[in-house]
Image (cartoon, rainbow, N blue to C red; front, side):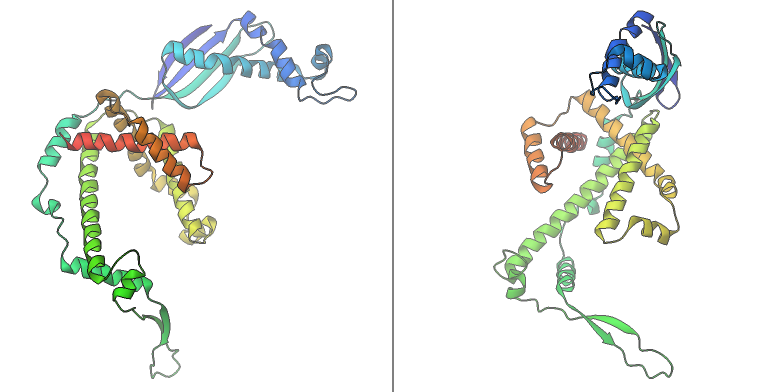
Amino acid sequence: MLVTIKKLPKSEVEIEGELEAEAFESYFKATLKKIGQHFELDGFRKGKIPESVLISKVPEIRILEEMAELALTEHYPKILEEKKIDAIGRPEISITKLARKNPLGFKIKVSILPDIKLGNYKKIAQKITRNIKPEEKDFVVSDKDLENTIMDIRKSRAPKVRMAEEIQVSDTKNPVSDTLNLPEFDDDFVKGLGPFLNIEDFKNKLRENIKLEKQNAAKEKIRLKIIEKIIDDSVLELPEVLTEVELDKILYRMESDITAMGLKFEDYLKHLNKKVEDLRKEFRTDAEKKAKLGLILNEIAKIEKITAPEEEVAKEVAQILEHYKGADSERARMHAENVLTNEKIFVFLESQ
């Protein structure tokens, strides 16, 4: 097989080549057998139609197209391996020459993993972590924090009562508002929230939870600063296919959230007076940033040889499959490996 590789913009390559006539012709019998398994003809059972009859009944172009598909399905992975092409996404294939007992000509366009010139991620992380302000490390839970959270909890448990305000205005309908009948904050109330002994026990545990939330929020803020600076200082040509994948994820999550609220996504779009294409344009910058983040984290993991331990992955997969019944185990494993590896990358950066 003769093959030439041409680099294209946006991290794509074009593979142009020819499969020799003899090699292409070798797929003829396998193609007839494949077609014959599904071809229906009066007087014959499926899969039992003689080759000569099939050749006379099936258009030659269909046979040739099936031969080309079989040939490229087998040879495309070999080309990628031989030419060391890190392809991502589905290839775009076009046939340039197609005839019996002749070479098979083809062009394949496919996205590839881009070359990445990383910013100095160690120095970036070191500088940002060293310059954390004292107030960013303040995880003290004040009495006001505690009382505000308790009030939010009481409000969430309060039944709503519709109350009409009396307004002495002629020809004006009385406005209606919601009034909250707050439950009493006592031992019985906190025991109904969970395994709490009394108010004091509840407050102690709530204070710890609020402190943990503050710590997590501060950690996420620092991580965001680190990764945004690394992205800004890195150079890569982002493949279009990765941006589209991230856009699909964003819109899928949005549709799932809207559906969970009991609404139809189509009605939601009508309310916004927008189409899906409009949302894809709006979220494009976010999608590009997410795609770059994934590539950069993957590159750091490769350079620093950071991986998630198998026992941690197995434990995470078990929890996912327990929580989401019927979930695909292989996709759950990929998700678990990705999440755990990324966590270890950030811990590595924070330790600089």
